[in-house]
Length: 355
Ligand SMILES: *Cc1c(COP(=O)(O)O)cnc(C)c1O
Image: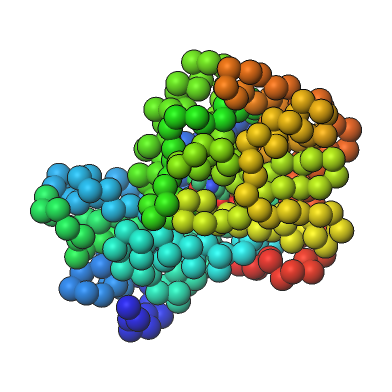
């Protein structure tokens, strides 16, 4: 699905920035958006001239297929600023490849690479003031695509919109979480869409997560849909287990999302000589390790929180608390990754992308 190369992006400027009204010290995640958004329409079998316009509501036909059949995919990435005022993305090529992989699975057209990177660069240059310096500050970037064609006939659409919106974010400490290991519900199945960043995967998680909340857990550790005997993901993050001094994480599959944070942590750990076993992780072995004290840590990995420590888990009516670790891997790897993202450390892997 290659298209004509567009070097032009049509830009419509606003007269006034909203930035003066934003309290950057007290941001709640994902509520405030920047002045502009990137929009590109797919009609007549091709992507049209991309535009950057003032951030504003969309007008869609009520029969637009995204509302009925859920053709919607997205990405989550961040821009970081160093002390010199230079702004960076982290491995954006991975997000680009992944949104097209997600689109392909949902029978949506792939987005051209040059449109994506030109759009992102141009948008982020316009929004430079919204990328605040300071360790932990970032601009959260949400590319997404939806089926806009008006018609409730149940097949894939032939009209789409690809957008990029941006929201300033802070790193905030939400506390270590308790998680419940899933024994009934599943977020994904063999042959399904678990590996895609598809909106529907999230919709399917809210209800079981609410049930877990009623039992005092903030998130669910998803297990394989067939047997519920293998640990797969924690909420909307990949999950790592530290047993003694080694890390364990499940291999990616069609049920598990191939997270950029996950693969970056694996590379960092291996470079430091920490063993990472990428293999199916049995619930029973983690329960045993919790009982005999060899389970030191559990943490989630994802762009939004980077590393999110788990302090306890529930399984089969039992509750297992983890001892707080001095010099935890979670803290260590969070800092190591953020040091690269914020241009405070060498970037031996070539992960930083200067805007
Ligand atoms: C986005 C996401 C992740 C984390 O991916 P990153 O690329 O590290 O942000 C993990 N699991 C699921 C289900 C996700 O949607």
